[in-house]
Amino acid sequence: MRLHFFPPDLFEADREHLVRLVHEIGTSCPEGASQRFILGEHTARFEEALREQLGAADVVACGSGTSALTLVLAAMEIGPGDEVVVPALGCAPLASSVVALGAVPVFADVDPWTMVVDPEVMERRITPRTKALMPAHMFSVMADMPRFTALAEAYGLRLVEDSAVAQGGVRRGVPAGLAGEAGVYSFVQVKTFGTAGEGGAVVTRDAELGRTVRMLRNHGQDGRTRFLHHRIGWNSRFDEIQAAFLLHRLPGFPARLERRARIAEHYTERFADLADHGVLAPPPGRDGRCYYVYTVQAERRDALAAHLADRGIDSHVYYPRTLPRQPAFARYAGVGVDPAAEWPAAERAGDRMLSLPVHPQLSDAEVEYLADAVREFALTS
Ligand SMILES: *Cc1c(COP(=O)(O)O)cnc(C)c1O
Image 1 (cartoon, protein in one colour):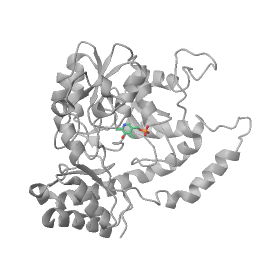
Image 2: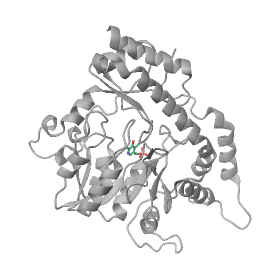
Image 3: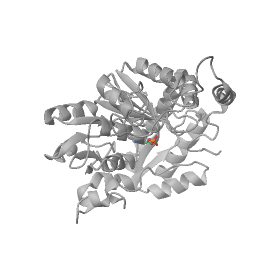
Image 4: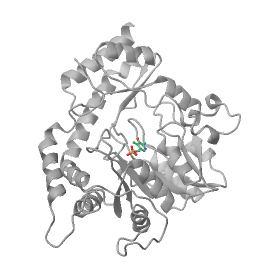
């Protein structure tokens, strides 16, 4: 057996369709209209399809999930002198999007089991300079958005939800992306609603914020008057071929998510008795879960990874280093601060976490093979 972390045949079933779209969009020129490769009718239809599905006020497709974070923070006028509280454990854009605007990322520790940023710790990181909170959904578990919403209200702060890995997830009836003022999605190949390339979106309940993001993604223009720049923006426009391809993939998305959830549920059941043997599964349940990757914590993590590799099973460490420990962000961690003392749960998670394949193309036999391999490691080695 050979279990890839991400399926090597990701778009096999849609290959013919993709080729047709490239041909159509690449060669068509509707009567009286100009040919459009970006921000055309397909992008508009894709945005509308997502907006309607979510019940959002606006969905703005843009260049990437990273750029979606930057656009939201910029629309909220976050800049020099401002602090944004972000998780200490997570991907680089959580900190770099803040730094790119001249603001300061302040790192908050995570929950030791879920590895998602802890609302109580985030509250302790709030200072008079704090302008926004930016929790992120991670691995298999969504952040506790009801508590972050209450925190933002109590302190009068902006709330950005990094829902890049949680599209399709729901917590207490609220879809990922819509709990805060604005959320983001990423359509990069490997994400649960990935495309054959790059892309992202801002989703929001606030129509005015949506309008501002729309302007900022295309150099501050309002979409009516060309070369009139209301604000300094970026080029974060959306590709028509990707929009058409994602529209085609949208109806199949719930079934693919359901397959991920079933696989994850099965792992969690099979790993339930391994906690005393050094392998801790994420919390069970369906509410507030998102299975972009399935992440366990293992006392002998590297030995487990090697055991799996010997059996042809890929695994990945997301993320081996906390954000304050990254050379790029160390200066925001504070002078003389000891990361192990300041962010103990994030540090410990970084040493123990291992992500396992959970993509929908896995067969039942492959899922069982992986679960057996993890059990064998925990119970006999
Ligand atoms: C992937 C990811 C991003 C960035 O999305 P890109 O489309 O890769 O730029 C941001 N935040 C989180 C939590 C992510 O996992």
